[in-house]
Amino acid sequence: MSPELRAKAEKLSMKGIGAAVRAYLDAHPEVKGVYWGMPGGGFYGRYMAPQQTKFKGFTTFANSWALMSEVLTFPSDVGRLIEKKILDAITPDIDQVRVTDAEGTDATWSVTPETGRRWKQGLYWPGHLLMYPDSATGQYSYTFESYPTPNKDWIPREPIAMANGVIAGTNGSGGFWPRMEIRLKGRYITDVKGGGVYGDFIHQFLDYPHINDLTYPYYDHPGYWHLWEVALGTNPKFFRNPSDFYGSGHAGIYCLTFERYRSGEIHWGFGNELPNEPGSFGLPTKWLKFGADHDLPADNVFHIHNYYITY
Image 1 (tube, rainbow, N blue to C red):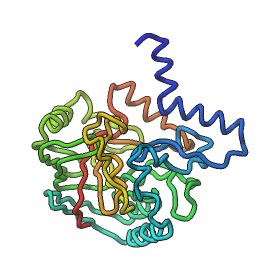
Image 2 (cartoon, one colour; image 1 turned 45 degrees about the vertical axis):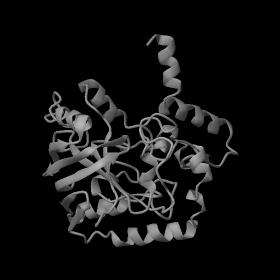
Image 3 (cartoon, rainbow, N blue to C red; image 1 turned 180 degrees about the horizontal axis):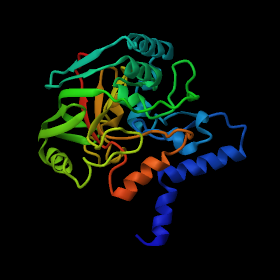
């Protein structure tokens, strides 16, 4: 792109919009809160830092289907009770988790007392509970009681969980594909079977130059290909956008993202991501610089959705 177009694109990126929102809040301290972004987007608050405590959530009415739906008619006190009961069930005393699903998922991970403590500290996100220890770390997290004010202590990523088994499914945030299996051993993805073009792409990307031998910041172990995210929806009224099943319309490439908030749905995220770094509620500059310097990805972009989970 020309420099002029690139500058315009930067203004329309999350970083650029976040800077504009932050500048407006700096000039208008009477504004108490901001709703920004579509459900499924991540970490909007960090793009507003140090005004991140004014981020109240997403713009749910992003299309006519959501506007006409019952998503926000579900009683908030019942929704919070659902989340509170799940949060109370996750305790530092858990030593192992097993997750199975009718599509063939069967995965386990061990939980040490230290891992369980950090997981419990960071697993809350409204409507999107972080049901895997690594998802809850590497960030200034939220608590059920204090949201949207982040905790004051950064949660270290290491030691990480040791996931093993198979994650299987036929769709994710970006659409549908033939049934795919992603195999995990000792925290790493070791193989991908099926999935059509999408599966072939991930399989080839497993051997991208230096993606397995370089160590990312805040890690003690090399490699990018982890199971990073296991997130549980809690609202029984969320649904797929029926006008956009293949990423061509309102939701961009993430056409099935909305359904990740539906109660009982779990979405798995593969790769690696770091929400924050120690000392900053904003973007993880060291983490992102590492990705840019080594031509490596710095977020997770591959997902599988499961619907009939036993956790």
